[in-house]
Image (cartoon, rainbow, N blue to C red; front, side, top):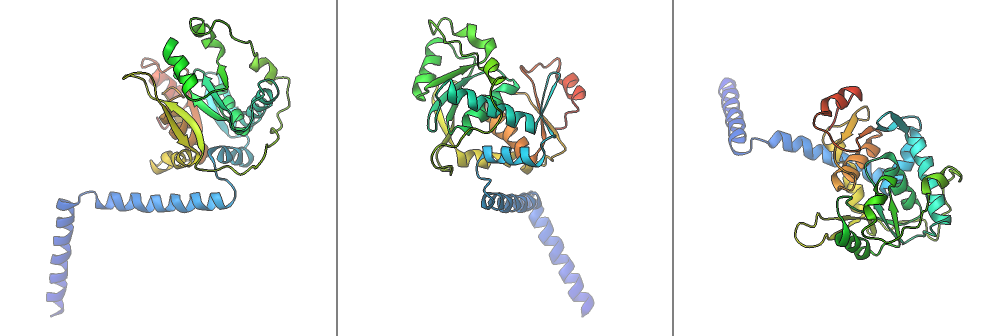
Length: 292
């Protein structure tokens, strides 16, 4: 009797496994992913209860916990979490005093892939500004449309891109931001008004490519940015990884999934000014890249 029961149970179990493989071959993969997602959700809620709510909050928190950990590797530079935090403070001080930037303003950012893209981005965020990432390949009428459509009160341009604006703007005020950043304090800027950020409010503007008509601005909320933070963790990346970002930072995949994912993990980002297929493996070997 016992033998019959065991044989029947084994046959039923085998039939169930065969049925699962045929009908739902990815059941166990999906189950593991679901459990991982639940764990990430719990971790995110716990972090928010401790006051780490936005992407910027997460970065500042990591700069406090792992100040000497390399955050950005760019060419021959190695920038720690603490360095980027302090440099973004300097950027915020300059934009507050020289540019009169304030909470609620929109600032358009036209910069190549470089560490100061991130420092300027975070500096503006520390002032409570919304940042619009402009595609540096967009010219003339399309570029002016992007600036106007997001209501930008300030345009921050990388020094290597200023010449590309000559046909659009008859004159540019020479802000000399980089020089001024060396002369100001690296203390955090004073907080204006209510320090609590509405997580449903706009965090970024990211533009479509404009293949059909003029580029269109997509509003990215703080909540959407926070959801992007866990992307690399969900893919199996670890704090010890070095993540090579081959896309321009004005892409959401590079800035939110890549940079944001590194921040959430406390990982290191390897940044390339312009992707080169011929130099790709050399770059990966030189910087000991583990994730692309």
